[in-house]
Amino acid sequence: MTATLAFGGRALKKFRRTPIQLLDVAVHPVVFTLIFSFLFGGAVGGSIDAYIGYLVPGILVMTLLVTTGTTGAALSVDIATGVYDRFRTLSIRPGAVLTGALIGDLVRYALASVVVIVLGLALGFRPAGGVAGVLGAVLLVLLFAVSLSWLWTLLALTIKTPGAVLALTQAVLYPLSFFSNIFTTPATLPGWLQAFVDVNPVSHLVSAVRALMAGTAPGASLGWLLLGCALLTAVFAPLAVRRFNAAG
Image (tube, rainbow, N blue to C red; front, top):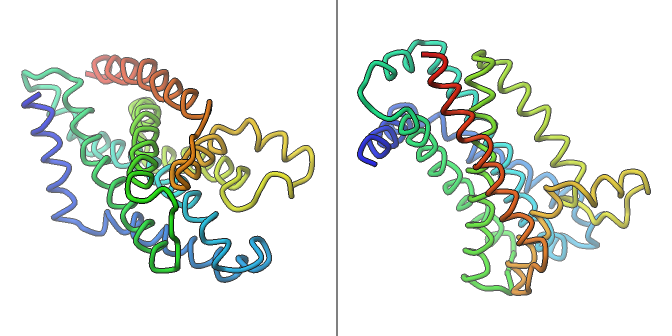
């Protein structure tokens, strides 16, 4: 635990020394929220005020999912510069290195969540679920983001090229985000696309987040999402640690 916290502190110090690393969590949600609310809000939701309530939960999910992609890229940069080779010479559990790095990522995800919620409130978003509903929704997305980060951690340890890791993660995350119910209801989409949106895990996450923020029960979606988080962590966390050991 001490080693994990130490590496978590290292990740936070990196943000303090180079705050530009936080640029994506500040700019991404602002750009997408403003573009879709003001340019497409009237066409999609009938009015900007009506659409912002539908959009903000989706932007929260999209922002955190896309931000997880930089987890693997940042890790691959450390690998390429030899930082992790030095870590392997220390008498610590290898899992502490990777888990500590995720602590820094969790802080980035939390900051991104704050940006989305504050911007949404400024634009008129008023969640019926109140503070409890918003906190529950944010915690759910944070849990999913951290679980997914283990996959990108394994990818970074396997590919070890920052540009390739970032390109691959974005090639997966952006299509999953756009072909979901983040920006529009599935009923307005062509049949073939609606079929994909309905089975897209991002859509289920967004639906659960919207339900929590609206103060309603998320239903079976919550159970499936928690199961998905458990499976992502149970499968990819041990594989990432094993890959880290094998590279030493």
